[in-house]
Image 1 (cartoon, one colour):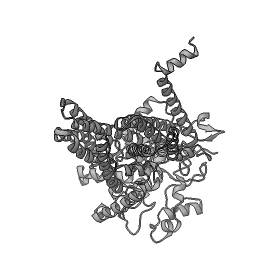
Image 2: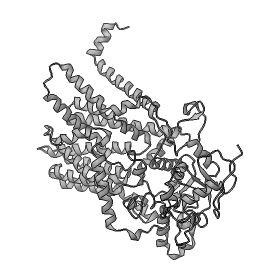
Image 3: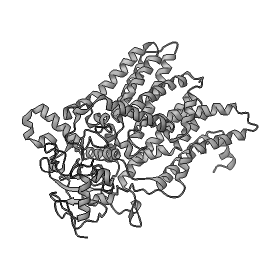
Image 4: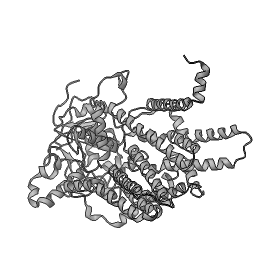
Length: 614
């Protein structure tokens, strides 16, 4: 057995201290992950997260790229495309027009993240039916949905990988001190933990973006070399850049716009072979994106499905979720002024609110100030230009692509693109902090450590508050309560169609095919030829066996949305009022209110008594 002196000697001389520090860092990461999940874990609360999760499950179950969350607008695109292919005769085949009789192809999501989730569901023990395991309940009260938790853990692992990449990138651009502090502050930024827990594709996309940054840094280094080496190395980097760009674009379509800053950066800083390398990046990117675009076009006649119409959403013509809930949208009314107005309004909000708190931290202020600093490392100076190019492009893309999803979840949503730039902004912010610290004439060295500690604590305050009372509820309720949604959906079979104002939740938690509620429950007598109602689907496409309206739908504005002059004739507001006041389904509606159902806060109508007596 080694003596204490020999043990200390191994730590100091034999490399043991390095292993000790590594072990300590791993222990801290494990404790931080466990503590955050214990204090602040939350089941999925966004439409996009549940949508991609149920899509991944369908892939894992061998159903192909099909969705249980059906948008009326996707039905419109399929119908329009089939009519164009088959001619007017197709109008007599409603099943072929909508493809809703069995499985419905997904037209909203790019494939990488759902395929990634499908692989996880094949490997990990996902349990989609809620059980009574003590780990998921406390004193008989449901707290955590196991699939949500597993997806959250995987995204947290991706986040830790991003932290590691930030460390090595910062060490290469600056020095180990900047690398350590930048990684520490990123790890202590609560916004990124919320993104990881949300179930969104942001962590995977962030890791892809960090890979793109690394390629840009290496290409710049190759171009700066006074004696260029073999052509193969920059070609490989250009090919890899195109692959990473396409991978990001197939994770989130808006990421593909980063092709513009990548090509500009390559042309400016990739050396003598810049044009050849830029062409290689472009060709590889287009080659990898094209098969998926062709798939979408064959299915729907559009290159990006419903996602390609995000430009129209939240404009004057299509406020809130009106476009995706439309069976017959008036696309001919679109004009350029609507886009210009959307760009101006959203850009102003981004510049005033989102940009100053990029990444959920005031470190952005140091990053903006650091743009004026001269860096000794040419790679750090030039990569700063790439960051600015990305910032300009993403501000425009985020402004034009903003939809109601950003209003429903203002910070944690898939349309928050600026968050991708936060890790690199942290690196530059920390480098400026150290540059300022070097200018201080501190009498003792300990004061330097105190300044770094104070700076770190101030930057991580939101994360520290997570561990203070009160504790966050893991349930995203209202309106998402997994056991209740499974109970409601359990009254139908998997082959039957349901309708809801939260169809993504019925599809994910309830494992049922669910269509987004139409614009109206009844036909509009003022415009009988417009099919935007419940009957247009239930009678002519596929029978709807169940209607579920969550507390979110029932909490609408009484006057403006329900009974005011702008409310639709016999719209959902009047429908809900009549159903609640009369405690039965409105006159003329084919579904009735069941007598036995333990879901008092949801308005549920069905075609029969589908639940057992309590």
